[in-house]
Length: 213
Image (cartoon, rainbow, N blue to C red; front, side, top):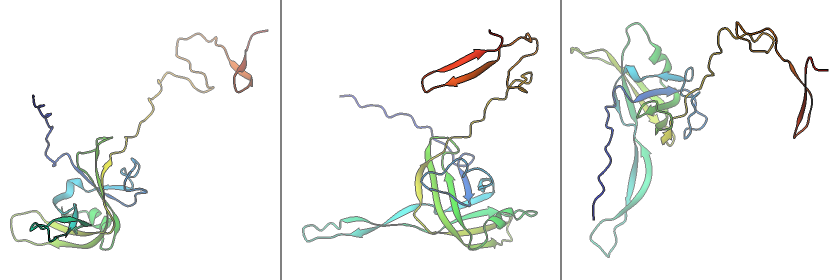
């Protein structure tokens, strides 16, 4: 009996791949839409984050020992999400992040773990409220930072699907003349046939070409 060789993983570094967004509102955290993870609803925090703590769903197991065994068995208990935080580099000239995350602000911290890959089941959505925001002070040789602590106010949605990207229609050729609803390229003959719908039914349509008797 031969053992099947495991498939090769495509491993990656989260830095440069994962995205961290602050969203003001989401209709359904289990199915975030492309509009919701786009501006102006989205505020991209990714490039300003220096450290991240928490952002995980945990379970508080219940021990169930019995007289039939010396092993202390357990069953799943209540789920919980410990308070989490993001530490940011402080911008000397801008307070855009501070304006988005004042104390008491409610919204959603959204993590695209594998990046913005439509169809990938790798979006974690955390409904949160800003508990505290405070600058960190140091005399060491390091960049100025501030830390934002969040409380998780509702059940997180894990492994949601990255929504499909917006699709734009192709741009029409520059030499296309649509002033009267007829496409014409430069160099084409001026003669053309207009078609007018005279009557229609559910199964057929009768048309008359202009110029016919």
